[in-house]
Length: 223
Image 1 (cartoon, rainbow, N blue to C red):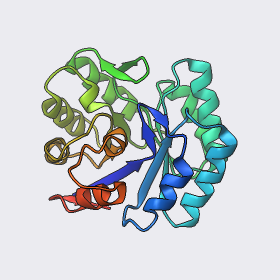
Image 2 (image 1 turned 90 degrees about the vertical axis):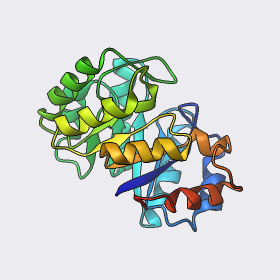
Image 3 (image 1 turned 120 degrees about the vertical axis):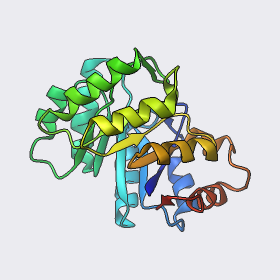
Image 4 (image 1 turned 135 degrees about the vertical axis):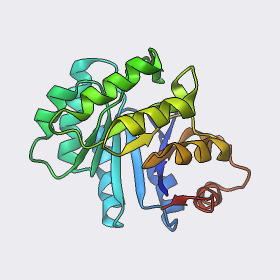
């Protein structure tokens, strides 16, 4: 079984009407909701975070900033938002120190990531080695793998990363069809995120809430 994480994001940015979108789907059974560190002012992310957490959901913030300074600033802000999970980013050692003694879980990106929208580069061996390195760091509770942003055998890479570490792995990015969800589930990920695909209507139902519900009916998927 693996969890479905609904991301209030499109093209690696929090959508401008994230508050309104969330209100439309509040009745969903989804337990995990996330957004990015770019796309909305932090004051708006703060009010959105409070709304999501007041509903008893687990909140994830994924860091996709492209410079070290902006990434660490986002990590510090995420701590102030009191999110449950910080995903992404590459400054793992510094981020772990910022997040030390906080009641949240930190899942940095495994492998070398570039650009925005973020891509995963390097060989499968390099990505697996980096996953092992990160998993050994104090303060890292899991890994964020941009599986379908990798130009190679995605299921094989994902399976190797999952088997190489004793931590939960979240598959993120470009999961836009049931077959990809099934592949990630079979590879053993703890969770997968879907954002842009829902806003693009990639799942063959409408409206957005119905697409989310359809994902939860897939084999092995849970809220």
